Image (tube, rainbow, N blue to C red; front, side):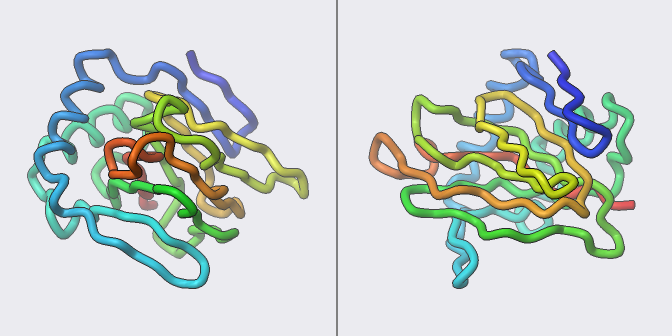
Length: 172
């Protein structure tokens, strides 16, 4: 189901078929050793940058396929896999750099593994809260201020049991 929140945010629930979703998870599992911790005073998370490790990987092709099917420029992407564990978050920011048009987030895990981790987005001075839900795709204008609220993992805190997303930017 597609929800058009407004012209700046799209939410697609139950986005991928079970077969494509499971294939994506399988490919991520094969590269789990590539996660690195990134931390500043504004954020802490684990991430894999596709440009460093996944060029030509099926994850890249699956992402291009599903964004292209929605009518977005799927040739010029920044793709990442990001994991937020307990107490990890990302402070308010925007991704409005000259070459970025949209952000995308595909939630790979849901509330069975963690609590919190909501995406808050400022639109016309109001905050829109998006609750992470497995197999939901969010596409939003890169100019929008947004942040990720802190996460609390329910089991262990390893990446598979965290707020795991396939995310990135669609370039102009």
